[in-house]
Image (cartoon, rainbow, N blue to C red; front, side, top):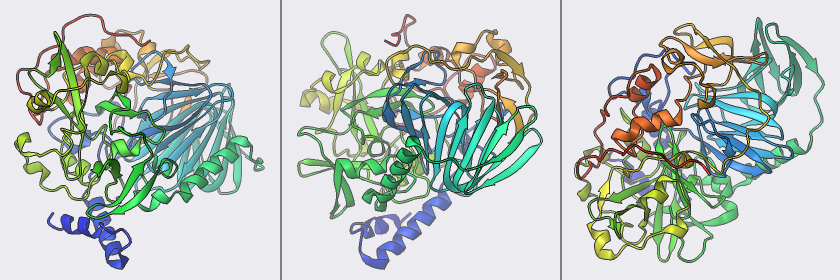
Length: 593
């Protein structure tokens, strides 16, 4: 890719006439044409009867698209996929397939994911049924949802499943969906755009300026209704959309970058020679990236950074940080249709002697600078390594030719390394107040490692403190067979099973060619078949004892789902471990508190 450095130089002055604009268009078109469908099959409606993952295929890559909790008001509860304990929701926490949110009285929440924003009002029970590069599928059990679709890329599907019908968005626009607490009716309002309603024997389009009421389940009735007047929740949602549209930061970043509209309020942009547009946060003296927050365990990426500041999402999962003079600035990547989410753009430090006192092992990391490659600590295949780098920085080249990590000269290793005791890291505890100062000679001896050899506790897998289970519908378990190979079907389903609902033996529950689903009188109706249920976190964590701190590979996850042992890790990690991997000792692990 010999033309990339030339394009990067063109970007050094963002407003340099039509020549720079032409380069931007060419780069965007090139990256879009080269970007594989990271993290999902071509058919968004894949079912649980998929064959076992094999080889180094890109079909099993993590999704490029992830969700972000971007606004919280009042009491909002969160249930991670694979956990059975509800916790407090947290700003900037990464949301993905299988996660569930509940808003209490007088509470609102907002979820950003690429070119879509989801907002929920009080007493709302929402599940992210599926989220990847082709589909965002939501399950609305009860309550009020507002959906803003800014763009609908070709081949993408946005679906909202309710007890009275499945809603498929047909064009960009603004939508509202109200579901009765008992699931007896669903009210659909199309402020702009258009949706298709599907259910038992029903397919009907609802256009801009129209509203309908859906009733029934086995037989769906669609009744035209007058457009309701806006309420406070609608007006707040409209105000959030206007804020996004007016954000100056939108001219410097991809419109599919979650959280860019927060940057205007908390910093400023400057055009810097050699770099182009750089965003400087308004922070205290001594601030540095990846220190004021904590590490959380979020599948399929594993260790994922969660920043404390309200603006702290896109600058920590996209682009690179750069130290200019005495200030840190964020350098966004090129403007591309689908930026690739990274759990944390850092390199980890470890090795023999990276400890303090007696047997207090440390975990260290530092931010990657411009041009420095990101090496994922989770499974990937195909062209993922190149794509996750070129969509997040403009001048990284020949990354796949790096065979010795010592040949990478990191700019910020000596000035921006953060280190904490390993138990602080593994528990997902706040970092800033527990940082350990590393003497320069000890830091110089530390080695860049593929990932920390630290398995997460249950505390690290959740966004906040445990809370009581909210008043949501309880779903008894029932095993139902799904037609093999059907990507699109109108069928009843309920939320993918969490660890809380597992009462059948594991072998029977995960039998091949069957999917365990939750069913009740208020089952949701879906058009796209949901993905397999998340494995219980405890089961997944136990299988990681052979290789602590490394997320299980797709083939290992498949083995667990069908009742077999996970089996060995097959990926070749880079950079390599400095010595034999030490297995985790069996014993109790920290619970959430």
